[in-house]
Length: 135
Image (cartoon, rainbow, N blue to C red; front, side, top):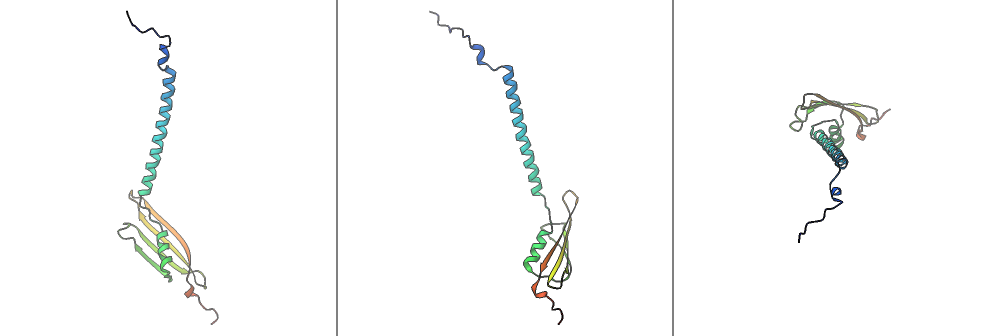
């Protein structure tokens, strides 16, 4: 007895058609492109986060914590924390009731050689500086 499998009529249905392979390839290409685009955006964001950017907010925070408000101009550097950056602060009396205007300016150069500049103006109140008018 010869036991050979009977020829199947549905044998051609076991394989994918060319159109199915083409559609699957397009779906795969779109998915890969989307994944690569997400990776590119994440890497760009990471580069921005690792860049040293110095602005005047740290100076304003430090001055507001010390509450040492005296009229005049002061300047300095950030030392080894941010090499190549310097700051200038100008404090002037804004009103006679103890309100002072403080102007900050931070100057420096980024790693790629571009000039980096940050300016900020705030008002600070110093209650013990209130002048007595008329006495």
